[in-house]
Image (cartoon, rainbow, N blue to C red; front, side, top):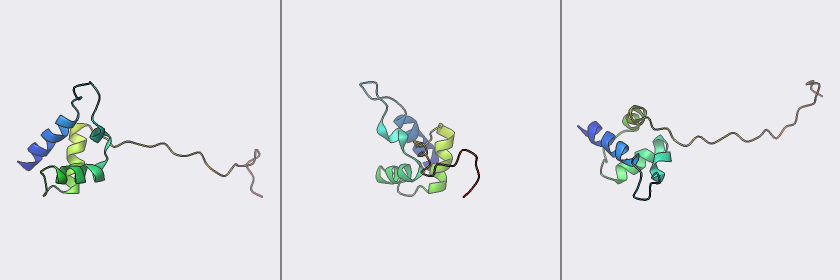
Length: 80
């Protein structure tokens, strides 16, 4: 029963607000979503449940790009 209620909370987050913008919580990953759910009425939800429910709801956390490498390799590819 708790899973269904938490899943409904995740689906409610995906609905845009009255200005048509997505809610910022949609970008949360598993760790932040776990804390958000626990703070908003689901104190006994586990991290594994949140992970599974986010997959069911099609939610992914914000994936940040990798930085460019700081080491610039030689053109011939050989080490010094």
